[in-house]
Image 1: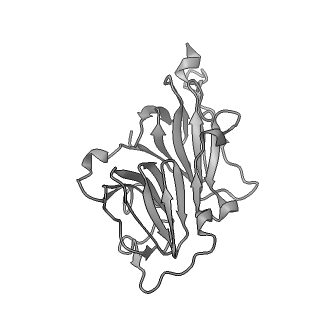
Image 2 (image 1 turned 90 degrees about the vertical axis):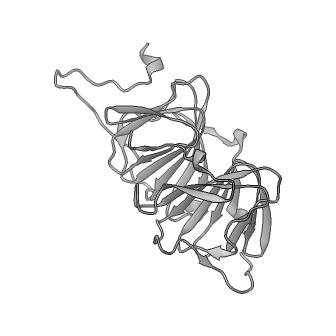
Length: 266
């Protein structure tokens, strides 16, 4: 399925490297998605800024992050938000590999992914508020699956809404529908069956699912354990706007197409 970018981690060399999942020219043009791995003792680019917002979601290990003048230790399952123009950098002081998912929105110019910051680092007010840990106890159960928000307009993210979803076995998202925004799923636990139109495929940890606005889709968990993914909406709908536009599909013999997880059909 061309909507799924498979986990590229086998391509990592034994040094610091970021691999694009979406961008800077391919995939959807609303953002860049990357996966980065930092070996022990290695550093990312020195203090720098971006023209756009950037997010890190730490998957494994621990990264040391500098935001302005402040320095923080950030462990797994934690989101770090760097608003556009915020000086920052990161490095690995531990003896284990650190890995994180990166997201840049809107998509920056391909020839200006970053600008090095010269001079003394400024104070970034309330820098600690830019770090949001994910909590297993923080998921709130909705009608179909559990979720907890990591970034949204209410917390300063003007270009995207990001939440973590936990999908129980036999459960899934709404029946076939589409959105008026681009949507991405980054799977970090379990397996998620994704249906786009009539095509189905399974997304596994490290895979990125890209759903452009208008793409008719649904998802469900056919596995035996909970599935976890980051859901990213670009842009976040305006307050009061409709999120899901449901779709009814009928075959030529007029029999309705029933969209349910396989577990419920048996």
